[in-house]
Amino acid sequence: MPRGLFITLEGLDGSGKTTQIKRLAAWMGKRGLPVVQTRQPGGTATGDRIREILLDARSGALAPMAEMALMFADRAQAIAEVILPALDSGKIVLCDRFTDSTEAYQGGGRELGSDAVLALHRLICGDLQPDLTLLLLPSFAASLSRARRRNHRFEEQTGKNEGRFEEEQDAFFLRVWQKYREIAAREPERVVLIEGDLTIDDVHEQIVEAVAERLVLADQSA
Ligand code: TYD
Image (cartoon, rainbow, N blue to C red; front, top):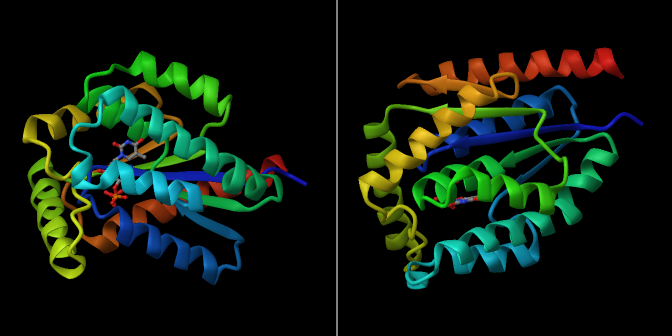
């Protein structure tokens, strides 16, 4: 059986990723494609517990190295429990964030550097890489204000503040943003960069175009 297709979505908080993943999953569902949707951190029972530690505003004193290690602990569990079994059975895995997030947020934002992240990736994830990464980068200003609004709404509704990252300073997000651009420039074959303040429909169209192309390639090599 041919290996499935591993697709990741990346971008800053407030980039519209969640909306686009839902639309892409619906597009695939309509075509009868077998999709497994997941997210990081989270996506497994253990991962959801790790996610709570990572995102809770009360984890303020978490050391950057501990943060990075927890991101990879979550990822190791998701790979074993969800991602590899799905790919091995020929399914499409649609994953909201993967190692590019760690490189952008911990490598760039927390200034741990790309080398440390990529070394841990090799150790923990082996040679598992997405076949396609859709990187959404609307303008920096638009992403920031959307992320902050969203976190306040979530807190009002649930009483929980999951916004440890959303509360960071603009300089942190600028470093994340720059690291994402660096990754896109380094790996243009894997990473499709969707930039600018486009409408939801326009972004969806670009995503579908990139995905359809990969599906044809995967069919040809099967
Ligand atoms: P989440 O609520 O899932 O945000 P989003 O909808 O924007 O994906 O929160 C995930 C947060 O965790 C987000 O701020 C990015 C951060 N993160 C890292 O810092 N490193 C990582 O490796 C991953 C996967 C996420």
